Length: 198
Image (cartoon, rainbow, N blue to C red; front, top):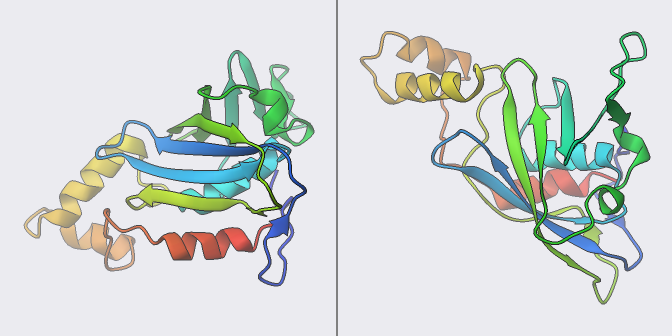
């Protein structure tokens, strides 16, 4: 559900010591891989984790999403078209949904383009003092542009912008705003966005 994080005056939320989850979020079916390593509190609800992933990856939260943990799906159920298999994501914390280090689960964003992300729980530790959450620790490469057609469309897009003789070169560059660097990743800029989440 959108808007569950409140924007603060540049301060990240502080949480009492409790389990901190180090997650590696990897966009699947894209080569070379686009990934982020983030630190979040175990008591974060999945709707808030969704927003943190959006900010860390570089998505714009313009489409539907869901988490799949084992055989359970979590998301934002539509009251007018209930999906009985989809549980409300704001009612479950990461710690309740995924309790073990090494666990892997899936985050799906944009049911049309079908951006699948694998989330791996790299570690679960209790910090010695309160930490600022969420925090991006590392990452590589730029997130694909929204609405580019999923992994196959993104591959076609990259082919077009890299080849000045490609018939869609100018059109694709204009569509993306003039330039796109698939290798770009700015850790400072990502954490600046994450600090606004509370």
